Amino acid sequence: MILAISIVIALTIPVGFLFFLRTFDLHKTVKFKRNIVTLVCGIAAYYVAAQINPAMVDAGWVTWGQVVRITAPIIEELLKSLILIYLVSRADFNYVVDGALYGFGVGIGFAIIENVEYVNGNIEIALALALARVFSTNLMHATSSGLIGTALAFHRGISEKRRGWLVILAGYLLAMVFHALFNTMVNAGAFLVFAIAYGVLGAGLIWYVIRRGMSEQQKWVGEKLGAEDRVSVQETRAATSIEQLVDRLIKPFQERFGDEKVPAVRDMLYKQIEIGIKRKLLDATPSPTKRQEIEGIISTLGREMNDLRKQIGTYHMMFVRTVYLDQDYRVWDKIQARVAESSTGQKGGGLFDRATERIKKKPREKDQS
Image (tube, rainbow, N blue to C red; front, side, top):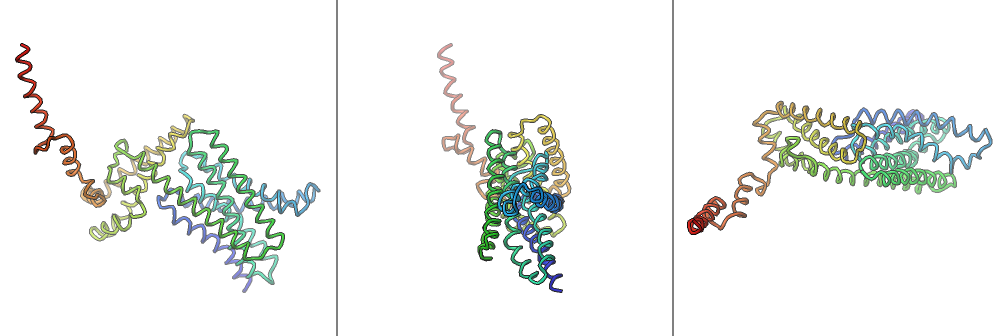
């Protein structure tokens, strides 16, 4: 019974960490199916590493202590990153948040199978071992892979490729050093509390990366969404302040119109966000083939967004667009401000100014004739 509980803990708590972090993906650009794929690939990476590491010791190339401190962190991080390289290279990949969460997923996949192996091999302390690992080793694996995913994603989003390659190199080195320091500390008999603190620190680092990535994505959306995508100022404001979506839009919309159209409104805003991110990625994509793929995705998202607008309906869309507006963003206020800027203080503003200028020109024209 204790063994069964230990295995359940070893499997479910790490996966729970992953899905908890997914809640910080407020723009919903990280695909759920891809996270499942990363978990599976993490499991596969563990089984490959489990063959390579002992084989190197058996061949006499390294001692087991050197495997733990040096070669295992390098080999394991390289294996875990293979799926990340593939996902980041795809045209439908977005930015740092995606890379961090996909990296976290592959690290969790690697860790949960390692958990089961350790628990089955130490039945007498299975429960304590399972609890210790989920808050230390598992978070370490997830963090190191998350760092690589973040570096690969950052490289994708910048146009200066030399700088991008340096970022990738730094990401790999940081992940491997982070992994190696943990292994060395644990192998040297460090207190459990230090191992747990190390793992929690790593999870905090990934959380910070995701929050920074979200902030950067908001800037991208605000910069790139516009008339080309038939996205209004109001909708852009909604997309770039997604944290306030429930309180400022969905809740009043739901109270007024019910639940039926709420999913469509959410989906529409998320698609607008993804269009903004994709337009930014176009600036950093030199490959004509990749640019064409991204443009195709943008076109598809645009069609889906327009379909959702039709599904929501004209009247409901008017509410979506106006509920977000503060007074200084209302159309009539904009007109009044434009009039005030161009006028001499008369009602009608620029219209009367232009008439006055023409009247003044008339005498001059007569004198010249």
